[in-house]
Figure 1 (cartoon, helix red, strand yellow):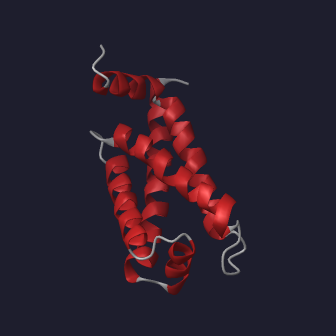
Figure 2 (figure 1 turned 180 degrees about the horizontal axis):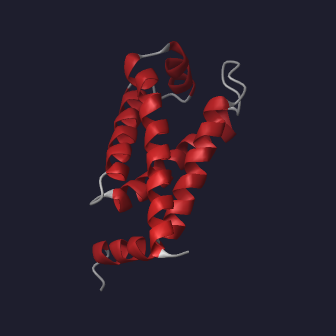
Length: 135
C-alpha cells in the first residue's frame, strides 16, 4: 500500500471509530436506562459508566488530532477489547433486545483499530520503545 492510500485509509478509519465512540457518549453521560443496565450488570454503575465514557471521549479526540492519533489507536484497542470481553462474558451479545447492535459496533471498532495498528505498527513500535527507555 502506498503512503497516500495508507493515509486516506487511516483517516477514514479514525473518523469512523471516533464517530462511533462519540455517538455512544450521549447514552453514557445522560444515564440512559440501557447504559445504566449494562454498567449495573457489570458492577460498574455509575463510576465505570462515566469513567469509560471519559476514556472513549479522550480516545475519539486523540484519534482525530494528527499529533496524537497513535495514542488514540493504542487506547482504542484497550477500551474496545474491554467492551467486547464484557459482551462475551456477563452481558451477552444481545443486550435488552438490541439484536446485538452494541456488540457489533464494538467489533467494528475493534477491527478498525486493529487495522490501524497494523498500518501504523512502526510508529507504535517507536512509541513503545520511547516509553520503555530504548532507542
